[in-house]
Length: 446
Image 1 (cartoon, rainbow, N blue to C red):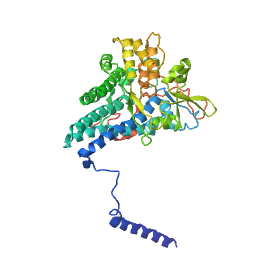
Image 2 (tube, rainbow, N blue to C red; image 1 turned 90 degrees about the horizontal axis):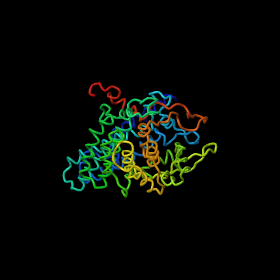
Image 3 (cartoon, rainbow, N blue to C red; image 1 turned 30 degrees about the vertical axis):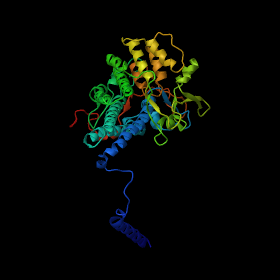
Image 4 (cartoon, one colour; image 1 turned 60 degrees about the vertical axis):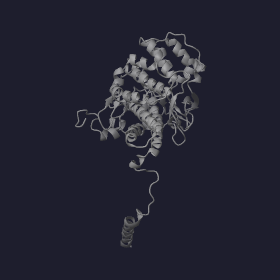
C-alpha cells in the first residue's frame, strides 16, 4: 500500500509538471498590477510617475518620522501599556541599549523605513531621467516633473544624509555637552557607494537639486525650499547660510508642507502611537507643559490614556486617524530658526518678537524673555512636536537623556538604565550586506 501511495504521488507531480509546461503558463492572464519599464516611456504615463514619487514621500516620512521621534525623547516606548510589545520599538527608544550589532542592524522597524526610502530616491531620479528621453511632453507636465524629480530627490537625500549613521556616536554623545560632531558623522550611501556625510550630502547632492527645483517652483514652493535649506544649515552649524535661507523661507499665512495620508496609505503614528495601537507614548513632560500653561494644549495635541495598572499616561493626538496629514515644514519652524539665529548666533532679528508671533498663532500668551538657549530648545520642543527634528536639537544643545525613558519595574522594561550609544538611525543589514563600502570606504569600487 505504501508503494502504491508513493507511486500515486509521483504520478501526480509528473502530470502537474506536464500541464504546467504545456498549458498552465499559456492559460494564465497577464498581471494587472505590473507594467514593463519601457511602457512608461510614454507622455501619458508621466503624471502617473509624478504621483508615485509624491505618494512614496508620504509613506517614507511617516515611517522615518516615528523612528526619529522615538530615537529622541518625544515618544517613549513604555511597557506600562498592554499593547507595547514590539522589541524593535524598545531597541530604538533605548538607543539600542545592551543590544549587539547583530540585532541593531536587523531591526525591522528601521528596515521598513530605510528600504522604501532608497526606493523613493530611485523613483525621483528615474523621473528626471525619463522625461529627458520621452518625446511629446507638454511644457506644463515637463515643468512639474522637473520640479518633483529634483525637489523630492533632494528631500530623499536629506533623509538619507541627515537621519542615518553607519556607526554609533557613543554612549556619552549629547549628554551634558553639545555633540555637533555626531551630527557631522551622520550620513548614508547612494547607489551602493560609500557613506556620504551630512555636510557633503548637502553640498554635493541636496542643494544642487533644490536649486534646480527652484527654477520650476511656485513662490510658495520656493519658500518651502528655503526653509529646508535653513533647517539643514542650522543643523550643520552654518549660521550665515541658514539666516540667508530663512530670510526667504516660509511666512505667516503659508500652508504647512505635509505628507498626505489615507486609509490605504495610513499615517504610521495612528498604528504605533494612537488609537490603532498604543505602543509608544508622548513623554510626560508634554503634559507638564500644559499643566504649566493650559493654552499649550492648543499646539501640543495629546490626550489621557491608562496604563495596565491604571497609571495615567498620554498618547499623541496630533495624528488621530489613519488619514491625518503630517507636517514636514511650517512657517512657525522658519520663525523659530530666525529667532535662534538672532538670540544665539549673532544674526539680526527680534528673537522675542518672532517667538511670540509663533505662540500667538496658537492663542498662547507671550514670553517675557530672556531668549536664551533653554527657551529656544523648549519652544522648538513644543512647536515641532512629532515633526522628526528633536534628535538634532538634543545633540546641538547637549540635552540628550542619560537614561532610558519609560516606567521602571514593569515586566521587560529597561527604563532607568543608561541609554545606548546610537543617536542617529543605524544603516540596516540590507545595505550592509550588499554594499562593501559600509564600514570599509577603502574597499574596491568605493
